[in-house]
Length: 300
Image 1 (tube, helix red, strand yellow):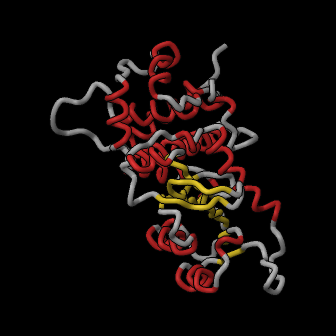
Image 2 (cartoon, one colour):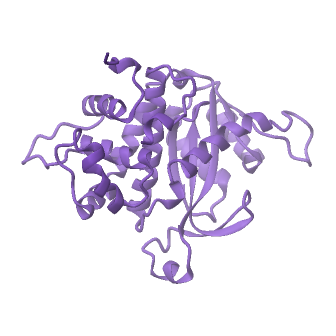
Image 3 (cartoon, rainbow, N blue to C red):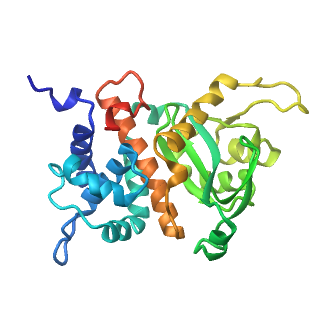
């Protein structure tokens, strides 16, 4: 007995439902010229499948794709073609993420989570010297792992269950509060008056708190520092929510193995992981999954 689309949690059903949504609401209709063998909608679905199946290597993914995904994609591109298309799809990926985030019930909630995390882009000095990211990436320090890295920082705003709302990449030497303030100011329409913004101690500062309160009309809640009067406490349990989102991105979705070599490539490959997470969360809401951020049903 076959299951209906509304109650099935597997990769094929997710990609089918996602294709219909993206084609109707995100990807603009092509009006001029011969359409490419792989449409923009199919490109996004294929990129999501790569992230959910855990293939950091595009070569390995495209070798396995005919057997695993051939029944869904009439045309599968070669490695060079797929990389070129994906590396230029950053703006489209961002639009898709925001469109998906508006589909979940927690979009209307009064809570937003914010955080930043290192995004390494090179591991050796020789790679750093040759990198096309020079000038945009740099050396930074990861407090949670007590180590230096060369790359960028990912700044992320999510709902309570981890649905990405907005994001950006920045040089690690720029202050966290400055970047997050600029991100929230740019996408102020995605943050509603009266919402609670939950952050960590890295966002402690009078100017940032005044910005959140006065300009956004929101309430900043963060763990208390040792040198200030008690207000909110340690908030350890609540801070685990955003830390678990980052862990999903880096663990199951291979964020640190993105493989981007140019600014556009790193942006698109980071967005690819965020889009995969957003697609899974939306589908889990639609199928009433008990854990909305779970990817287990889609990784095989």
